[in-house]
Image 1 (spheres, rainbow, N blue to C red):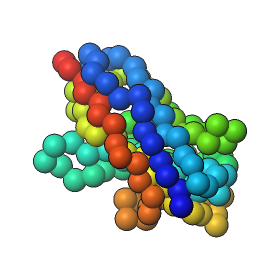
Image 2: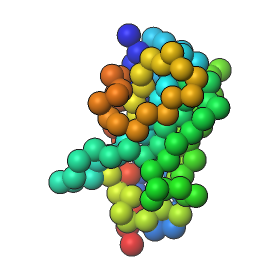
Image 3: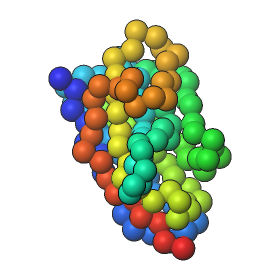
Image 4: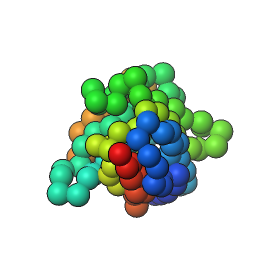
Length: 127
């Protein structure tokens, strides 16, 4: 059973940077496609970024392209989300997610395609 644990959230001002981490256990990220989602108060959970198993392919939601970078370190069994030029509208609880993937190209963007989730980490960006 894969277990995921996010860390790195916090409170910061607009245009700042933050790096989120998602440590996995019980499985290897070389066999799991992984992703970041976020949920702001009163809003539905939305896709942020995804990375294929092995890390060769990535996919980003349009509003974070050029600002966020998803990556994974298989040796550390950890996925990251580097967030730069943060905006107040990026404020949300950020969740990491994983799913077993037979394909090494899959970067699924729908939350229901993932069956392993972390507990979330709060990111608050002030203006």
